Image (cartoon, rainbow, N blue to C red):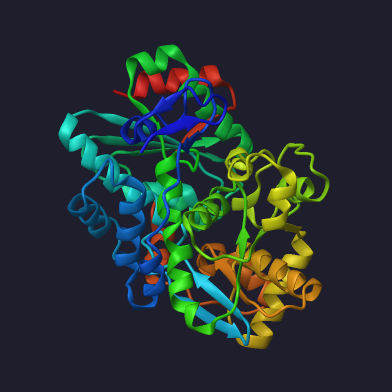
Length: 435
């Protein structure tokens, strides 16, 4: 598959170039030059397929020019030993649980696929790759787990000090080995800007092989499309239009859903659900994209004031606002509304939501009140609620079970390098640390 820059269609790259370089030289994002269609016969029988079989078919459809079906199968087998189940919580509402991977967050789907794909190429080239990644919460833990001890790959993770949960911080600061954590005295946007600037620095790129594991890397987006197809496979028999409500920060997750839609997945509408960092819902209302400084909220993984994947989201519709708003509706909610939703859903169903998942549910309910047509609503649960244990227990006024794999983290010692938001400081650290 050929990819081109969102800023210049004449700047192109192969799959291998796109995943290892992460960003085009003009600081755009890589987009597929053409999006192949999934086999209609496969969709007709998708309800008989396992998650792995769906992932193999989607990957092979997209990357048949780059990888054989046997190579795709090996990558999928390496990446996934977990599923994406749909759970009914009310007559027409279903939650797509994306927290059954090792870090218990949806980022596992992208990070583990990317690690397996990079490893496939590195085995042929015998190169050393340095992954740089910014995280607002769950990306760091998933990338740390996905790339931990992978030969030929070292990982540097930047996260905003005091703006991730204790468990999230422990997931990315306690592994060691080939994983280094940097605690930045700033916001997620500051972390993301440092990573982007590193990729544009000629001296760093001349000395090191740098790549990103953020959703700016196209290899993160492709596998996140798998679970949209998987949700359809589980709900196809209901014979109702599907509406996906997606809790959104950097908008990689929603962009992956749009990729699935463009490949032929039947989707009635997507809901872009955010907290008060609402640049995209505002754009969907008035047609003007105005990024602002991020605001700290209890749904910290969505605290993104200038989402990188916005350009990908609109590019799927040729940057036509009228076409975008025909397929995507935007909603945003504050912390008080988020906590109220967590309490209401637990009171009505005994189901515990993380704060990000609560925002997705709230958006789905608002959409349902505004549109009285029959549809099946699917809201994405992007993280296990125990990853936000203090907030969830305070909100519900009761204790919540913590899975053993998360509970065991709390006793481990955090190891992180503290740093300010200066690129010069970051560059100096990389020059001394990377190899």
